[in-house]
Amino acid sequence: MLPVLNEDVVRNRIAKRIALEFEDGDVVNLGIGIPTLVSNFVPEERRLVIQTENGCLGAGPEPEQKDYRFIGAGGRFITPLPGCSFFGSDMSFGLIRGGHVDATVLGTLEVDQEGNLANWIIPGKLLPGMGGAMDLVVGAKRVIVATTHCDKKGHPKILKKCRLPLTAVGVVSLIVTEFAVFSIEDGTMTLLEIAPEVTKEDIRAHTEADYVEAEIITQMKGTEVSETEAVK
Image 1 (cartoon, rainbow, N blue to C red):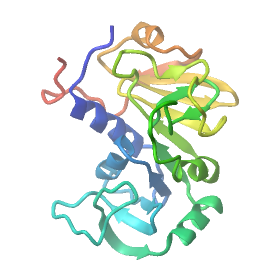
Image 2: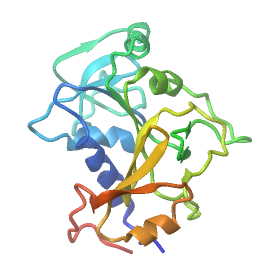
Image 3: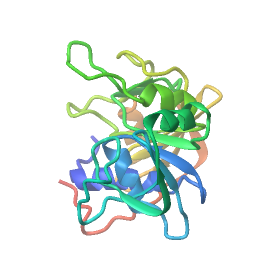
């Protein structure tokens, strides 16, 4: 059985690990939920150019003082960094569709071993629409999924095949959960890293997808256990 971590630990751990994935100067779009936290953990020596769908390039982390002039596409307050620019959503989606975004980080309902993504609707439940995800998953050069390893009922979210309506087919290259990091390349899903509280056997038991293990599986970066990361 997987340990149950504090919710803030889960969210921050996933965001912290993903923040280590980028190169200095990368243009990155962050989806709603856990992905928005990534901007809080970017290493000081690295600068990301964060793009928001509603027309901002150069957004920074959430400020302590809320300023209603600066709100991202997900309704989260942002800090305009030096050199930041604002423009219409038409230009914003032109950047996305034109292939100028290096990576997008998205949450998900399901993701599978083929890199298929289902993150926009559960049949029978009211939802406003897919939003910009359908553009991001095909326009961004890299798609990273930020997700809890299992849903609230304890069912795996990393599957052999998505069961919910798909957002896109074969687009995901990296999956980061609170317990593991997987890559997907050339149709093969590989376990790269695991958190210190779990074993390879734990991950295997709670991951429906078929995957191979890296020759050397390392401890998940950014998961050094501290007193604040209490296990319930």
